[in-house]
Length: 120
Image (cartoon, rainbow, N blue to C red; front, top):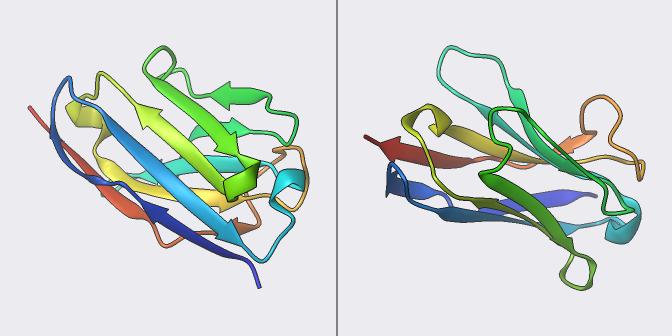
């Protein structure tokens, strides 16, 4: 079955950087679109960034110019580079895998999440 394991979360000061990684198994990774979502306390899970199997990307307006999503098909891994972090970026970040190569709707599979905390 599909398994997604996130890593790289932690505590960072405002203006700092973190890189999240998500290692996938149980699928032909190169054929799947991947995404990063986040959920802050008391809020709904929201899209952060997505990348199709064609490497086309889509980022939320709130992170454009600060975050970058990328993928390494040889390592079955998707990354989220987060720069110029703000306290409002504090959330649990989830990796998602789409069965399709396109990122339509919500992912079909989710990781367990990794906490990102940005202090002011």
